[in-house]
Image 1 (spheres, rainbow, N blue to C red):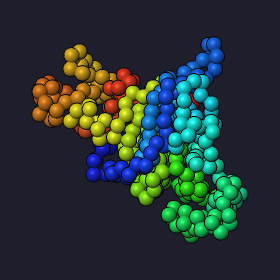
Image 2 (image 1 turned 30 degrees about the vertical axis):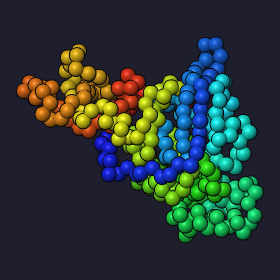
Image 3 (image 1 turned 180 degrees about the vertical axis):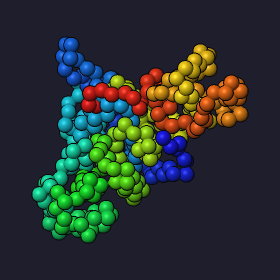
Image 4 (image 1 turned 180 degrees about the horizontal axis):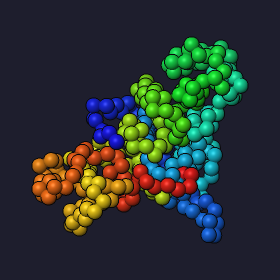
Amino acid sequence: MNAIDPRDHIEAPRTTGSALSLRKLTQIHGRGKTKRVALNELDLDINRGEWVALLGPNGSGKSTLLNVASGQLQPTSGTCAVLGEPVETLDRGAIGVVFQVTALDPRLTIEENLLDLARLQGLKRQDAMDRISEALKRSGLAERAHDRVAALSGGLARRADLARAMIHEPGLLLLDEPTTGLDPLARQSCLDHLAKVNCSDERAIIMSTHLVEEAARAQRVIMLDEGRCVADGSPESLCQQIGARILRIYETDFEPPSDEGWSKQGDAWTCPVSGHGDPIVEDLLSQGIELSVLRPTLADVFAQKSGRDLSTMEGPAS
């Protein structure tokens, strides 16, 4: 897992108002013994121009939050305002949504898919074609416009899905695990494309993910655990809360002291330290214990804030 390099971080663009505002938002699924709290009195404010990653394991509430924000799910209680309007009365044309499963018709070409959505949004044909041409250029899909979606790779299909979601120039883009099913190169290409969108437009991007490498690309990370926000800030600021370095020990018979901030993450014992010269590190090295000292990651932040290991947690769909 790579450490975060501040030089790879993109400066936030100007903000021009509220994109999403939640107050005491609560969502309960099921009843009786099957009752589960997906969102637990969540308070949240996201501005236009922000690229926000919702980071958490399955079952943390990420998809539920996006379903409420897109108007597909009515919350049990609390309020949700999108682009300054109550979500119940919001014009759905003001937002763009990309689901885990593509919304593209595989029988149609990329251009035909985009044109269908443009028509649904009430765009005149010439306006629609102008926007489609521009969207295809920005997405690097101009030469594939007449290819059927069924013939596209996963990465190209996802790029076309993003272009479709933005064809009507929404003020808010909601992405639910947008890189699901993509190989590493296609995932990187997708995130690079989002970075370009974020730099060139004033729309807000809210992206759910369970991968810390993806979340680290965003300007702001909101960590969710059991429907609550356990951490909120830029990737750099969150990691700085942990400390300069994280000590990791993978020896199975290692028994850490109880008073130095040790915690278990997967197969490793971890502890915040100042660096390789930290007295804890020197003492362990003198005992012949094998260890590593690395920059903290968002996984370390999640473990400290929630008390649980992000990499090994599983659960129902979020």
